[in-house]
Picture 1 (cartoon, rainbow, N blue to C red):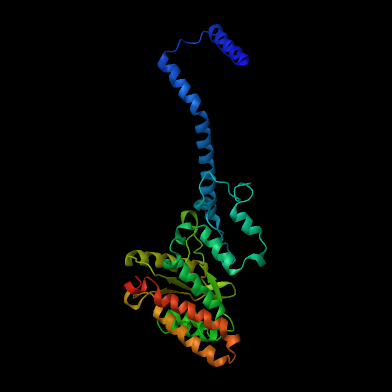
Picture 2: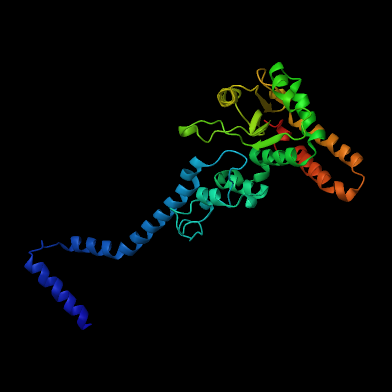
Length: 315
């Protein structure tokens, strides 16, 4: 109590010595309110700073996300945390960005699931009702292209695409009959600035160059918007691979196929899955050895057959 009185006396003496202006009752009250609110203001400022760091991590750093198959995909998005809650990604935010952590991670740790999680880390809005999202089904198709025997699944689909146009035939012929076709998730358009993250959906090719790009749609779209998107992708392909035959393919229902681009429908994929499942069962006599293939065929077939967009004609 004595210490408080001494502090008060010093403050009053200071006011007299330096001739502070005489405050009205209202002005004194205003200063008291500000002083009492100081703690709350400081707390809100800290919350805002934490939120800024989370936004910077989730969006700004995403501008530099790698775009090839070796590219990253991350754990649950930071924006799903409340801004005032501590996050393991925030302890050294400048030195430990998700992009930097991924770049330094052991390649052997970048399994398919880890890649998918990393990819969706930068796209948290695509996680809601994930079974409805176009990107999730695309990732499942990418995995099927990689894991199922390509001679009885991917190769027949490529042969089907090759019949759709002369350009498709020229681009796909070098891939037919090969032991393995390289599958690239979301190949980059190689653009800069605000469009540096633009990508196609699936790339197929060899020697690190996906010469066949597939643009898939399961959501509603305007034809004019899709045409503009495809024209940009086609232009990028000609710039990235000027000396190689390339083709851009759409994955749309037949009723929405565009006359200027060869199309593969989801029904085509479904039919190819059924044939693949039958061939696997006939070629591999042991149910145990064929189980993994058969399970992948069953799961993806059921996903396509029961997809929420299918009832409305996909798009």
